Figure 1 (cartoon, rainbow, N blue to C red):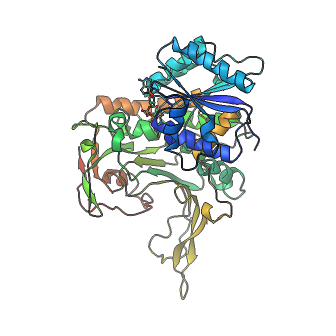
Figure 2 (cartoon, helix red, strand yellow; figure 1 turned 120 degrees about the vertical axis):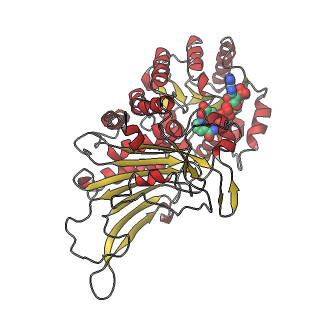
Figure 3 (cartoon, helix red, strand yellow; figure 1 turned 30 degrees about the horizontal axis):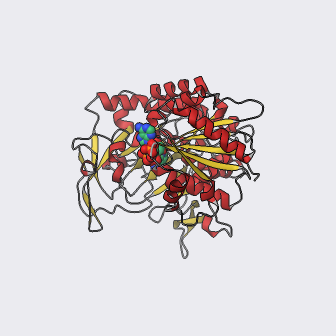
Length: 499
Ligand SMILES: NC(=O)c1ccc[n+]([C@@H]2O[C@H](COP(=O)([O-])OP(=O)(O)OC[C@H]3O[C@@H](n4cnc5c(N)ncnc54)[C@H](OP(=O)(O)O)[C@@H]3O)[C@@H](O)[C@H]2O)c1
């Protein structure tokens, strides 16, 4: 890995949670790994009244071992909505680059509330801070959420592209920064054994789960305007679908890979009309006891209205209408207050065409499964049938199991570490492109509209500590298959119902 060229990283929203918990710790790791350029500094921006010293003191409380990081941190107190303050920002950057005798390359990180994602680049542009010339580069990282529906995402793209070129814009989907997510591409395209089977002729269905055991906590006010479909499915889960389903890229380059995931999003069969009720299940967690501990329902959380109809769970059956995946169902689900925190992809292969061994142990005989575990306990598991020892020909499912932690060098970098480094190096492969973001929104938009407009689309309650509404189970059950449950329901009580 080579070090990026010299630059200053300017973080808007530097007094906030994301900066403290993710961005500065990721930079600290990069510094310890000696992956930051010799000439490098961070300039935090916020309305809160810090100076360099007090900002460093505040940040130091969040770093176990800051190393050299603190001395690289600077702060400018300004309101990002005040156009005139950008002259002060420009002056400060001129001063910082002059002191360090460095080229004025800048990354602007938008870690503010999303309402500012269009404003800040406009003011930066007016202050002349986004212009690239004479080899100097200027980049902007935009946090999630990127829009709240198709039109707002498109408007934000139009707005950003009014001030910057696409190659300067880095839209974060932190799932793509995860080592195990990137490994989906390596698993598929560097092994001769999987790819020939990776299509409608051999794959029965694909399942993707991303569950959280926590509730909304203190983020109820924000979450209630978002919900699981916007917060998780439109971005993270669809990105995983894109990587599992894409065609091999011509080369490993940013545009080649993003062209292929875009094609997947463009091939998603629209879910509209009556299909919304049958193919998309939404749920909301209800109070229950989990291992004896009382858990509040979503509507009892701080900042959540008592009559909220925001979904904390969504399960979807979708199809990709192309040559590779025609008629193969993809089942995807995500939710809060589920029994455990796990993200995994399960590829279910077709069972053998003829049942030769009639007696099978429970659970065997549904076909081989390849489980790609994104988090935690990162790894890959292949399930296959094996003879039960002894007389006869009974078959049992056994596991071929790989865990990252078994590697001698099992260090897995944090997603933000990788993503920040990539942006510093000008590599946007793991960032989402304007057309892909819009295609993903275009797919979920009819569902959002139907949920808003049609009170007959049910919202199902599920007790905390269960795998979501029972109807979501029925989405797969009824045939031979069920969702894969990484652990059992943990709720001691509580009934499923319609809210
Ligand atoms: N936190 C996470 O784990 C996480 C994860 C993924 C994505 N994100 C996204 O990243 C962004 C930042 O998240 P966060 O959790 O750090 O948010 P946050 O703590 O609420 O806000 C970040 C900072 O933005 C500034 N700010 C707030 N309201 C503002 C306003 N009206 N005008 C100007 N500045 C304002 C505040 O600093 P001053 O008051 O000092 O100006 C605040 O410290 C959000 O868009 C969020 O969706 C966060």
